[in-house]
Amino acid sequence: MLEKIRRISHWLLPRVCVGCGFDSYELTLDLCVDCKVNLPWLPSGCYQCGLQLHKPSESIICNKCQDSPPPFNRLCALFSYKPPLTKLIASFKFGRQLYPGALFSKLLAEAVTEDWYANKSLPQVIIPVPLHMSRQRQRGYNQAAEISRQLAAELNIELDIDACLRVKNTKAQARLNKNKRTRNLEAAFIANTKPSYKHVALIDDVVTTGSTIRAVSKALVSAGVEQIDVWCVCRA
Image 1 (cartoon, rainbow, N blue to C red):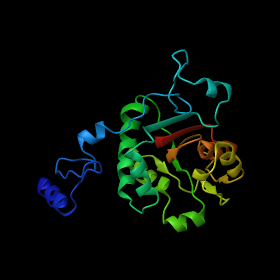
Image 2: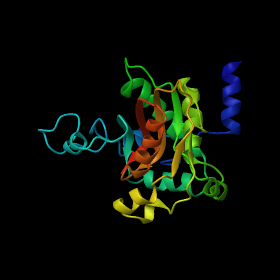
Image 3: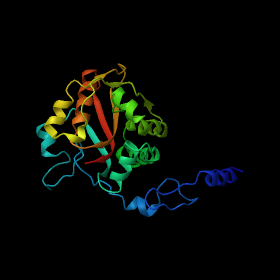
Image 4: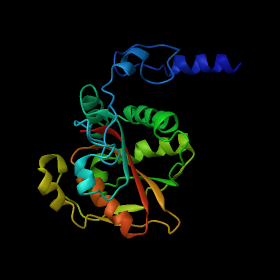
């Protein structure tokens, strides 16, 4: 009976691979095996910032992070910010297409349980990087929150979308260089976390210079959070 229901459900809402358009009853993700393998998976990088280590002499933490540690403790990313992820992220972030968000949540949950946190304690709570209310109204949703909702359900972790608020409506980060991005985000976030939050997972779609997650992390640390792990779909 259950199998019959699944077949009817698939007939009504078939799974289609976002990479090649292949439609199959056997798909458990909106991604076929071949397309999944060929995605630009990010090789192991610096434990703290996630960037690839280029020097064999470097430890698991790059020289830059050793000299100037970020306010977060760890960064885990699935992919390099390359095609076809650039197109998927754009359609999800700006095109009002939510299906990539569900796929990203599933892939992040897989990585957390099977790789990143094998035999390690998970964070207490998932916190999405917030959007300013005016930008969220314009876009219709916060893409980080969309990823976080399903991810929290998959991992059975508490979700708190109000733990950090964006109180300054800044210019779009993508149009600024690294130094201007940092200045642009000064006093942009305030934390509203529970006192019990000591270990949190901060969720974003793409981390580029890291200016946004640094600013959010500083706000969380000032509120008493002791460990911040960043989970993102892409590291640019």
